[in-house]
Length: 333
Image (cartoon, rainbow, N blue to C red; front, side, top):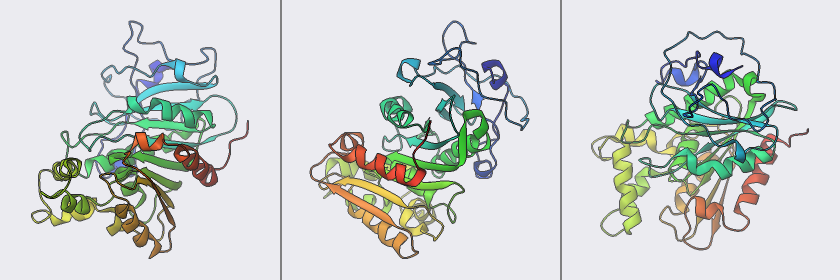
């Protein structure tokens, strides 16, 4: 499918219903002078076939720069797509143009729910593309754009869009994992625990995930560290500016350990022993999942490293990759 054809496809509005019935992602053309140019590591490679669904056309989305093709393995194409109408509802899809249908790895950035950007996840996206997987590196509405559960809804919508049009990306819609960093780890786990499991979801990985905003609120009292106090404020902002006492239902919705169910996927979490998102948060989720028969592994590294710096510690990325391969299988060809 060419860039011009992709530009006519539209996703359903990003509300709670759209999270499970999303249409086609909108291709956001390059911000270069030639908007029809598509970034590709192999310009001569044939674009993916048009999906059988025929979503209704929409007005052209605003321009959005696509990732550099220099990062792509030889048989990989990268495009930026919109999965909703908000400027933050975009995703970079890395897909292999050759070989069998690939399982997918969804990468979710961190940033206190109020910041961060998928552009900082390029090297991690490349690493999973080099393992042979389709990679979806996504942005989502921040807490300053919309309160919870908009962020979870956005991840659900992005996943739904890719699965719905998996043939366009040479992707297996029945095999994917979520990998989230810090606040993105909370979102990944929240999606994993949403309902009684998600179709095709084989695993969730969190690197320093604050899966218990209620614990973050308590730890961020006047006796907490500056980072813990900042996380407390960030959680309040995520809840729309409301404290747990005033908005218990919202905070209950954000609290991942409250939502464990038997159909949830296995999970893996990494923390540093002295970081401001303490390992006990993931241990709480582990206990909740164990009570319904779902396995979770929590690994703790010495030190204070958080999120991406923790992921770069010796052995962490390798362990995560091995765990994902065990969930998704190796890609032949």
